Amino acid sequence: MSIKILAQCRCGEVTFTSSAEPVMQLSCHCTDCREATQNDFSNIAFFKMNATEVAGELIPKNYVSDAGNKTQRDACASCGTFMFDTSEGFPGLMGVFSQQIEAPFVSAPQCHVWVQSKLPQTQLSAKRVQYEKGLS
Ligand SMILES: [Zn+2]
Ligand SMILES: [Zn+2]
Image 1 (cartoon, rainbow, N blue to C red):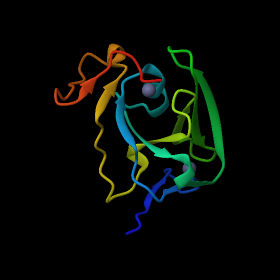
Image 2 (cartoon, protein in one colour):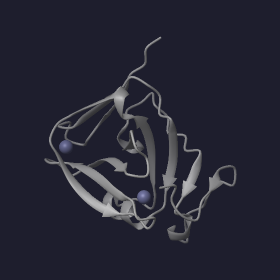
Image 3 (cartoon, rainbow, N blue to C red):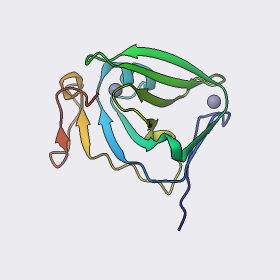
């Protein structure tokens, strides 16, 4: 059975498709994600790049993670929705902000990263692994 996971930005200009389930999902509490998405934390699903296709014009924004890896986030050139997160620390993987992924996909992060930067009011599920810092 072939699957298709779809994501798009608010205006629909940027689209993402994956023919495979994500290999990893996490909740990121870092300040960069918070700034990008305006959410307290971000759920990100990582897909193998060779199973994904992206269309539409993106504006890249570059960061260096605290671990020293170059990280890039891509936003739609028209509406500014942050869509993707790629890092040197995760070669071959493309992170997609889960809130942009369409149903029936259900976000199910396995772990929390950058817990040291989380907002005081954010409650963490004790069932998930928590990392003080990032994985990359
Ligand atoms: Zn857009
Ligand atoms: Zn983050």
